[in-house]
Image (tube, rainbow, N blue to C red):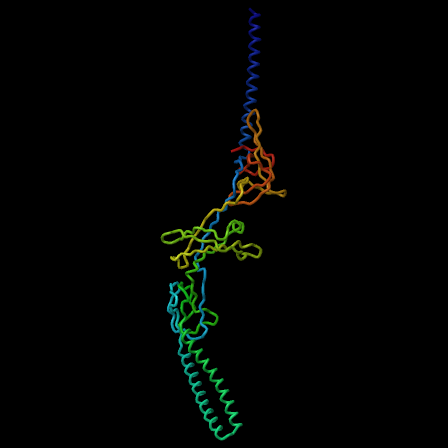
Length: 372
């Protein structure tokens, strides 16, 4: 009986040892698991994606105000006083319509004076011709020659005077009013009634409706490289009833620099021919251009730079008994062009690699992370 009890006691002790060992091992495993889990929660959390294959797309947008494509200044060469201004800025006008009238009173007086001078020359000519006849009858050769010379000189003076009269008549007839040379819109007026027009200043400026209207806006130089002259673009006219009008890209040129060393981009001119426009209307536009060949594209936010160049964090995964372990590695890449969201990668990255697009904390090469 005592032997049986001893054997039973020994068996219970062995069971207790095995149980204690199992509990210890389980506790260690649980502790390790929870330790790894806790440590994992403290790791930076990253968002990942795979590069896409495609072409860059450039969104070109802007807005502006319509102005006449062709503005024609009309000048007054006479210096006469402005008698009346018959139009206002923004008025539509027809070809031949009188825009401003000039006071011709002084010019008419000058014309009368020039005619009087011509008449006096006519009287002098008659007198010389009479003297020539008398000298011819008396036979004085010297007197005859002298009279002929005087008559010839007087006739030259009369010719000059006649041209002055004709010029004044034509000036009064053609320049007594400033008239529209074509159908258009009055863009600006400088004339003031009762005053001569300022020297070098046009009386009025007229926009030529037949040449259409321009919308000029500034775009980035990089975007301008993807725009072709002659391209047709839809503009949204911001009117009481917004509507679309077709425009053509007619010019791309350097914009004035915005600072001592900063480029000003490009000025793009869009020209519209629409009979309903008068100028001053507001319009906006937006369109997308393709960047050409397909290539590896990554989000702009995935790129970083250091002294060695441009790099991307690539996610590496390693299988472990207690779960997958993730680390990041730096991959230096060669970059191409960019659009508003993506950058083309021309070397250093495989299209199947997972790249880090965002992180909850700054990263370094080899850092452990948790994938979101």
